[in-house]
Image (cartoon, rainbow, N blue to C red):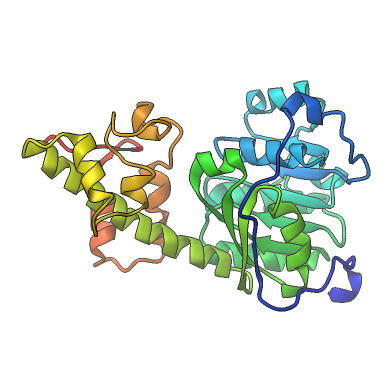
Amino acid sequence: MAASLRLRGAASGLRYWSRRQPPAVASLAAVCSRSMASKTPVGFIGVGNMGNPMAKNLMKHGYPLIIYDVFPDACKEFLDAGEQVVSSPADVAEKADRIITMLPTSINAIEAYSGANGILKKVKKGSLLIDSSTIDPMVSKELAKEVEKMGAVFMDAPVSGGVGAARSGNLTFMVGGVEEEFAAAQELLGCMGSNVVYCGAVGTGQAAKICNNLLLAISMIGTAEAMNLGIRLGLDPKLLAKILNMSSGRCWSSDTYNPVPGVMDGVPSANNYQGGFGTTLMAKVQLVLPRESIVLQYLSSNCLIHKTRLYIPST
C-alpha cells in the first residue's frame, strides 16, 4: 500500500511532539484572508462542542476547510467565514485528501465513513483520514481495513483536554496508525494540540484514550463524593477545594474541572453543566471494562448520573 501513497515524510526517533506555548493567532475574521494560501484544503466532519474550536484552530493556521456536520446550523459560522460547506461526508472526500472526523460515538463514525453517503464512497487514493472521535478500538481497526482497501490511510487520534483545551489549541492527541504517516498527521494535529503522541498501530490511540477516561472517571467520582461529604459536614466548598488542591488528594478533577457549582469559573459546573464531557460519553469505557468493575457499576448507576450531567447527590 505504501507505493500508492503520497510521501508525507518519514517518522524517526521518539514519536512524541509537544508545543508548550501555542502561537499567537489572529481573529477568526482576519485569518480568512489567509497569508498561507498555498495550503491545501482539509476536510472536517463534525463541528460540535469539540470539533468547532478544533476546526477554527486549523483556520487560524491558514488551512482552508471543507466542512460537514449532520446539523446544518453548526456549519453556519464557517460558511459565513468563507469556508466551503458541503452536504455529505462523501462530498468532503471528493474535495479534500486530508480529512479529520470528530464524532460522538462508534455508530456516528461508522456512518460517516461507511454509510450511503460516507467518506469511502468518494475517497481518493492516498488520502489521509484522521478520526479524533473516542470510539471502540475494534471499530477503528475495522474502519482502517475498509479505508486501506480504497488505497487510503486511516489513523485514530482521540483527544484529551476538553472544550477549553480545544479552544486554546492545547489538546493532547493519542495517535494510532502507520508509523510512517505520523509526521503528516502531526502537521495538522499540531495546529490543534500542544501534545501529539504516537501510540502504535491503529486502535492504540483509542486504547490510550479509554485508559485515560477510566482514570478520569475514577478521579471525578472521588472528587464529587469528597466535595459532597465535606459540604454535608459543614465545610465551605471553595475552602475544601483549596485544601484538597494543596494536599495529596489533588487531581485534575479537583483543581481544573471541579464538579461543584461556584467553586471555579469557566468550567461546566459554573454553566449549569453545559459544554462539558457528559457521563453518557464517559460511559464508553463500558466497551472494555469487565462487568464486575466498580467504576462500571458506578457509571451505570443513578448515583452520579442525571441524564448526561454529573452532579452532587443530595443524599
